[in-house]
Length: 115
Image (cartoon, rainbow, N blue to C red):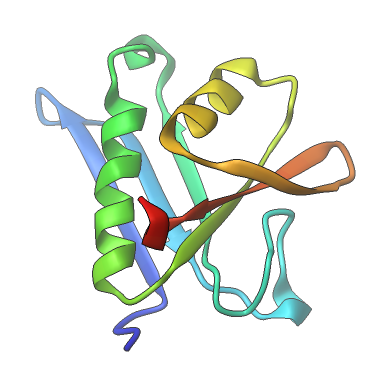
């Protein structure tokens, strides 16, 4: 059973927010570039430049996967510019696979139930 359609996690360093990851469930008539279906939340992530490469994005995503699993979701999706190689590498390392494209972005999906 899904408890809540939206979740967010914030990372802090020295009491200063340095990153966040979130997911949100959208309907087809409200879909973003990462839309897969009405049962798969779209994920977003942001990490400030000065802390990139320290594993914060990885940690945020792993915690979000745990939250999504507890909320009863079986997958998460996202949209990424394939030219953003750092992000694409992170997503692939975490288990995301490209499932579609929209404009100049890839739609990627992460299957929670197989992780």
